[in-house]
Length: 364
Image 1 (cartoon, rainbow, N blue to C red):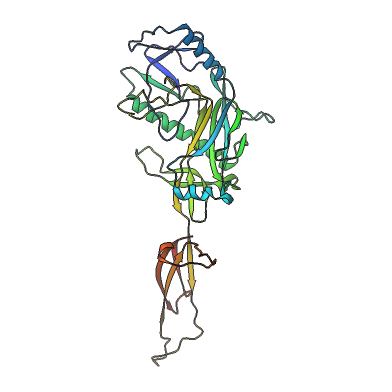
Image 2: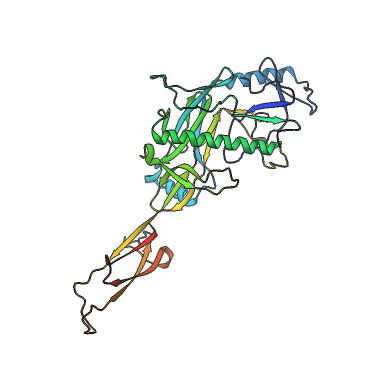
């Protein structure tokens, strides 16, 4: 499988993994006729390599056409409330992942995945050319810096992920080829290709698994809202971004760094080995699960206390407190300052239109 093309002044590279952070391109490489890659000395002159190394490279490229596996995991810095919740035996299967194969990879190119029964494409990719628009292009002396090119590429992948997730929400996409995958569960014998990863609460189907949320714009061209998938616990809503990955991937190379990306990065030119067992790390945002409380107060009769032929208004004051569910050894509900999550006061002056007051944004 060739991942590089010989082209003067340019290097075109498939991005094999794209998460929230993406590294920059390292050593320039060229493709040889037998499909292996050869590094250069920095002056576009191929460096001699050991024949055995070339043979190993060919074997690696051939192996990239073999089956791959994908395992969804939570990032280590995911919200602690979520990890604690999922570690409880009764909740271990509450977060699941659906894997959609968008395109397979063979004959040195992406090929749109079609439903075996209907022959219809799993996703409508009108307006997208995976074999053109989703290559990273680094141009010598023009076209912006490597950082600019990567930023533009990330936006392309984000836009495509949003488009595909939108089709799933509307019911216009095909069925996932891997459904309700548990965290830490490995799905094996998958085709090399491009996959859409959607994490959501177990039992949520179709549009009900999605929520559009506001996001901070770092650039005027960035969207103000994005589509996410959700999972709810007793106290929180977790929003997951749609993730696009390509498997197989490449292991991170800690030795290749640039001023723009001082951290280890992933690129097909890295010295790291091909990775056929790909881990997808999920990190959701967290927001409290909230609701509204409507208090209605009625008084059977309000006297004319001032004896002026008018009903004298009465103001009723309420104190509202809320606690997390906590019990003592005897099974009794404990209400103390430690688990107090809400406290407010409200009043109703009677009579009024509906004798009520509404309190908003109360933690569930």
